[in-house]
Image (cartoon, rainbow, N blue to C red; front, side):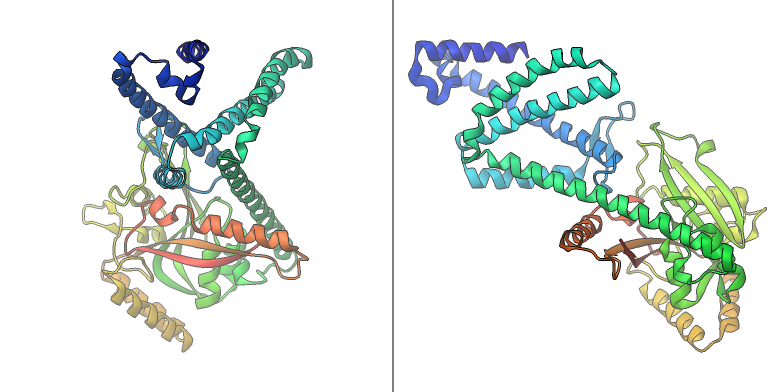
Length: 462
């Protein structure tokens, strides 16, 4: 900060002595003898400044995701001791492409002077506004001292910003357009998440009322709570295959739509249904003793919550989730026999994650076996041979190869029919669906690439 002020004062003194140097005040203020060393120093300073901007963007995106303004992104923590030191591949590549596009479009730094002025002075204004909010609502300052601090800063910021207003036409529109687009995306995503939570709450309340009134689940696709799933398992005639399926869910109490999709479309559910939630704690590493919490909910339904630190990457090379589930299996399989199918048990009694076949997957190596197994299941169930299917599944399980499938969902959002929605709501839902579908894929985010993973597309009404 002091060096920057001194440098600007030096440029002002050079311009007073030589007004013609206003075209390039920085280099005209430098003696010719040290021009090249200063040029090299300025280049290095530019690199340092760009790295500071990139790091700042990484931190802002991480905070925006934590505040639920942005969808899932891949955050890589480069230092376990400093949570703020992160690397985000998506942001890095977006900056790369935007920088290339701007350089190709404007072709010289002189044409970008307006964009720089608007961006910097607008940042001053936003920072002052945020300072007001912090002083009033966080620090609990009284009105008068807050005004004494903020008003002088605001006057100075407005003077600087108004001096750059005329540059909007040249290139100052670039940061304004980028800011508006980002605000629209963040507001739309936060609105969509709020709508989604509202719909989930309504579904849970309606389902609870129906269960209390009739004691039955009105529709298999409406099984959104653990209580409803248990009632459906007891009252419906499902084919229960000798298989363990791990369904990923955002909340321990909520049954994902993928369970209802399997039940309603195929009339099939596995004997061991594991509802798996993943939580990231505020520590870099979680001790293995506090890695998982387990609860047997009854009727072959189990709840597992895995805890990971923010510096623990979930990659397919490390099998983090698979190993954690296998550890829970090893600990709980004696008390819960059905839960034993979540892994392959070696002769030594150690459970290891299964990488065998599944009903569906995302790997080309086992597509033939998976398709054959899926076709057999559909053919037998369409023929009404539930007992035959169960017998076949029992034969497969007796071969010593216990099969586990990880099931995730891919949501597609549409407006509720007959909801009286306007054009703005249609645009919002379409944009929200586009944001979610183009976010970091959940399979790669959780490191579940492999033949034992299946993704089911379901529709959610907003």
